[in-house]
Image (tube, rainbow, N blue to C red; front, side):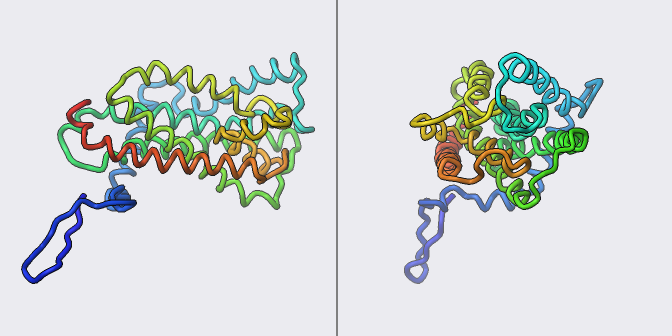
Length: 281
């Protein structure tokens, strides 16, 4: 994008935009209807010709919770901070499921929309953003199941901290979008991303306190652990709903800072590579 500068009568200079203006984030608002359409299309395609449809949004986290309950609760006897383990793990699986769904979908969003990229102009940022926001539908469905589980186990939410739930939900979206911007842009040039992504998400799961409490991480490892942006998201989300953990602290602040850094650098890298997408893809 360029800016037009008029310095003398009848003289106009056209210069490339610099700084944050070069990111052209205003295009996202102008193309907001396209974003909504892409979200709706992704949701329809995701469950098209499936027998269970949107129930998969519930089956996946429930089955994972059952496996975690057997391995970490019944066998390994991992502490769940005094909370029934199914609730403890399922609460963490909600933001984690949003993150992985968004990451897997958004990372492939460019290569799966080749015809659109090569034949028409629109901000390419629309594609990964729509994929990330589309994951909110699955999150909402699974959240209803969590409410039912909390009623069944007679677990009362921490009413004074519920205000933080949207905050940590937004942080999960920021983390997913930031990583997805990097991976989707790299995937255009190197399709190895598609092969590496399952390993990345599997490894990331085990270094995030989903199946266990973050209290098992002590000493100097806490600072290193906080470099994982999803560690702050999961800890904060669990605290906001169940009162488990210490709540927002320096470690959550570090995770938040890392998420913002990943997002900003991802935006810059994505915009720099955007001009080559149509030729490379």
